[in-house]
Length: 82
Image 1 (cartoon, helix red, strand yellow):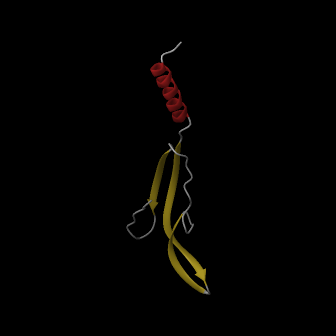
Image 2 (cartoon, one colour):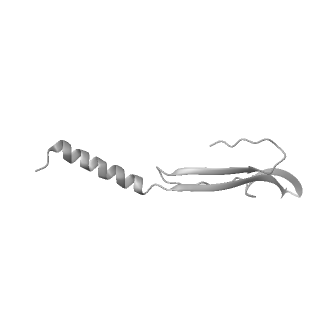
Image 3 (cartoon, helix red, strand yellow):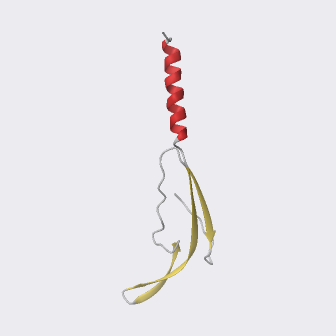
């Protein structure tokens, strides 16, 4: 029979390895640019991400790595915050 400490270590190792095997790298490219929208018969220029306002959602699972490439096509300096 296996000592309890060896069993606990083996269980932990299998759990850790299993959780790492499911981790993925999720990669997105965001293009930030001006977008003209029409609201109540008035046109307005807004900043949009991939022509969406609000920008697209990033869907990931716990443990995933996220890589986001941001391409600023607007005339303004830009920062992105999460």
